[in-house]
Amino acid sequence: MKISVVVPAYNETDRIVPSLERIISYLQERHPDFEILVVDDGSADATAATVRQRFEGQPRVSVLSYGINRGKGFAVRHGMGQANGDLVLFSDADLSTPIEEIEGMLPLIENGYDVVIGSRAHAEADIRQRQPLYRELGGKLFNLMVRIVVMPELYDTQCGFKLFRRSRIAPILPNLCIDGFAFDVEILALAGAAGLRIAEVPVIWINSRASRVRMSAALRAYVDLIGIRARARQLRASVADRRRPETAPPAQ
Image (cartoon, rainbow, N blue to C red; front, side):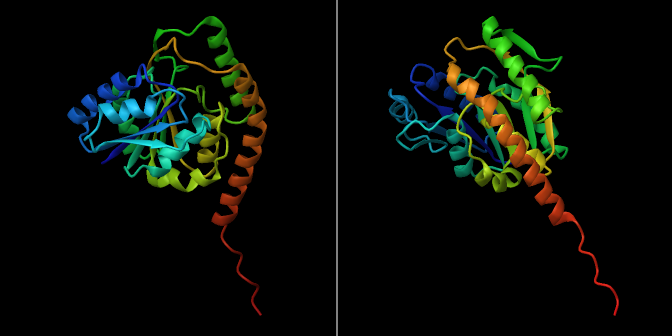
C-alpha cells in the first residue's frame, strides 16, 4: 500500500530539511512504497530551492509551487490532488506530531475507516511540549465551537496530522474552498457528510515555538464554521437523496 505524505510549507527554510530527512528515514524502513510532496505555499524565503537542492536526485520527493501565498488549506488540497498513493498523510512541516505516529492510524484504516486524525485532546494523548497558555486556551475554545456548531463527535480537528484513504477523499476535494485556519474542519465535516468513517486517535505532540497563526485568521475561522455547517448539511441531504430508493409507479 503506497503512502503519499503531503507537507505544506510556508517560509520553512530553517526546519524543512531535518523534518523531511526524518520522514524519509522512517518510511524507507517501515513503509518503503511512499512519496513526499512538499507544497511551497508562496514562501518568501528559499524553502523550495532548499528542498530541491538537498533532495536532488531523490525521485520520491517532489516540490510543488504555485508562486503566491494562498494559505495552508489551499496547499494541502493542492498536494492531495497531486498525490497518487493509496493513503495520503497530511503532516505539518514542523513534525509537532512525529511521523512514527502513523503506526497508530494504519490499523484503523485496515479496519475500514476512511479518515484517521491525530488528537491532542484525547485522554491518552502525550503532550510533551505545551503551547503558550493563550494559544492553548484559544485552541480549546475553537474546538468547543466546532463541536457545538459543526461536529460534536470530534474533539480536536486542528492537529496537523491526518491520514486519508485517497479513493474516498478525492471526490470531496473539489467541494473544498477554505484556504485558512478552518480548512481542517471543512474537510472533516464534508467527509462525514458524505458518509466517510472518521476515527480520532491520541498522538504524541510537541509544540513548535516557530508555529504561527495570525489573530485575524483565527477570528475568520469562527465565521467560516457557519458556512461549513450549511454546506455539510446540503451535502448530507444530497447523499441521502441519492441513496433513497425510487418509489415504484402505481399499477395501472
